[in-house]
Length: 560
Image (tube, helix red, strand yellow):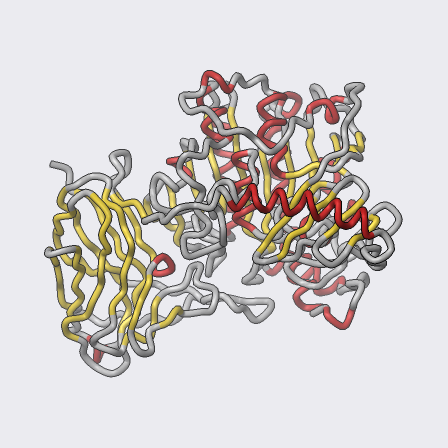
């Protein structure tokens, strides 16, 4: 079982000395197995997930961003779920995916038999949200982290008599900062006693919300661990626990420099705990540096998975198996380099040093990165930068090509084209928030506006076309049309649908979009020929001045 959290820093655990919160279940998990002293992930979400799933640096996988298509893993990548599935394991993923939405980028197309969660980078509502269950929209129940845990436990129980791979990807403490009252009230009463190393940067209310969300994660981890005990599966179940990047705010993080988005230590250091009572001794501390790229080769090695039996062979991995370190084998472990990048920032980490273009730090004597040694040790700095530049050149050679959004895969006839994946033109037309993940299009008040999706139809045929919209009374009678090539289908909006935003008890003001319901409008059938050509949404007739809002277009292949 792999558990990955979202924006939880290394310091967001009481095990690591943070007195602002209590995480007894995660602490106990760590103490019952192996803890990694220096484990590194990517600075942001989707790159870490791609590396975890493939054992390769995210740039090799085509993951260049966190939205607008840049989060997608290339389809020729082979995932851990495919390898374990080919070895007879039941496979499931619960929670946040963030490596592509349209099948076969969807989890079900990457080796996971079961998926329950959401595919984009963040979600607008954490209470009773609309979610994705194997490609179809369903209504979630309760707080989403609790709900994901419920489904994971159901999967474990249903597969108790066979090997399984359960990937639990919690989407907290990522913003928006939403958490049930019982956790928030307890954290608020406790307050913040340990501060970030630059306390003037810290927002204490953000810290309190994050601590509450981490305590909710801990409670759910306790539920998962209890379920394994009840089913008598704990002894022979490997549990891996990590986060996807550094903390999403300035808060206590062991005096480290940087946070989420940074290539400094605080942006990329994550907890890594591995428990396997059958083979891993409790209390083991692993000192050699390790990385997210190591998890796939490690788990394949621990479980004796013969990857040669997989229908698709994995590409050469950047990671190495950590099995000898986990099992305490007597090996001469070599020093290595681990690389980090986000945007135009790059760094290299060896066992002792961290360097970027302008800095060099001795991480053994100066783990807080306060003394830049670049001028005092220029030869060492140049040597490390030479290795970093070689890696950059190697990654640049794997830059992804131009990729369309797939529609109508033979194995999945239903495709959702969300607003965030579109390109649009028109005065006033915009996303409902700055971060486009989970946003919709609003401000459609210009009749000549249009929204385009760059799609590639994989299976020609007739498709029903549905648009999810919202509008006020004055926009009734507006005509929506979807066109591809010379073919078009359209329908008029016959009823207003202008609901309020979902209740969202934010603990801290959000930058992400709020959420609300949308109405479906059926436009009829549209013939889609195989191949690549844009799908275009227009308003041949636009009533009123308040405009319309668009969440997504849905295409469902009509079976002959």
